[in-house]
Length: 356
Ligand code: TXA
Ligand code: MG
Image (cartoon, rainbow, N blue to C red; front, side, top):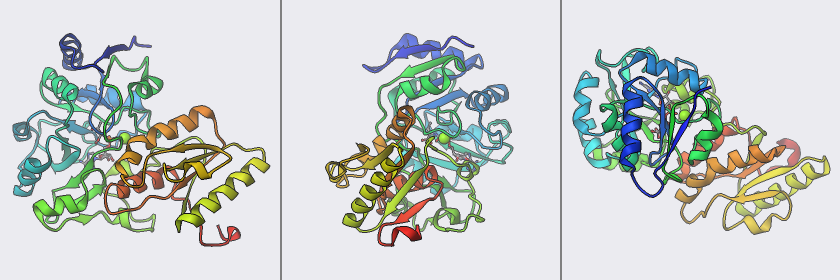
């Protein structure tokens, strides 16, 4: 077991903590840090051994590539083979911010960072502690989400502690993150830009800047044989310990069906967790009900979803029912993560219970 140092930066940057974190990273150690999306588990991206340590600490399959975090656009020169014009425009529009771009990689990036791929994912995060740490580390920090593989991504330092204490050198506590789900990933290595993972930056936002953008077929197809191009998207991710079922359909029908399911569970001696909204939370009498946020602003739902899944884990509920979210904006990313957590189990509230 390592001794995991915690550096409190909830009230602002602590220069001594940043210096220490930078030193640990330069020497090949691991530091978890806040970003605007979720907490990342950082290691020196140009050090093959550091990348291997990241996989080990997370228990993550090593064919699942890491995102390289930078703190200035000029850092692209060293780690990419070339920077297409579309990338320049997207970087100008959305960096620093919750967008990851995929490029052809240069030899400076070790294969263990990219899981053997000849491409590299790059992100310039918008968080003062993250940027200060990346700078102090020398400019290139590989960082997957700082959770044990298969668990929901951490949105608070306590989540990182839960999963990784004793396995990493340091955690920078920046309080609760702002966005709460991982960055939008855009692949720019083919003719047409493709979204590999939806996030806060939506397709519409990207298209305003660079024109037509496609969605990876695995994001829109129900056929599980369609393999996602982001290797990490094929794993059952963000998974709570209890089975999660999503109930979709007309608002009233959804509420009625969830109420019935919670009653059925209770009759079998099971405790059910319900993921509701500010609008609906009061209508569920039974069950352990949590509002993720308001439908009027689904960014609030994105911000709380993972913490609720973790809470249901720690409460040891037997089953979780969630209302569906699916709108053109960030609701799409929320639904993408929920579907993965649910292993794609969806109940249509408009159909008879026996058909589920
Ligand atoms: O918001 C975020 O992106 C967070 C914070 C910490 O920055 N990071 C994050 O990393 O979500 P991670 O490792 O949990 O997810 C990275 C995803 C995986 O699905 C991985 O397969 C994909 O990015 N990816 C990484 N490099 C890739 C590449 N060269 N080609 C295709 N997909 C790639
Ligand atoms: Mg992750």
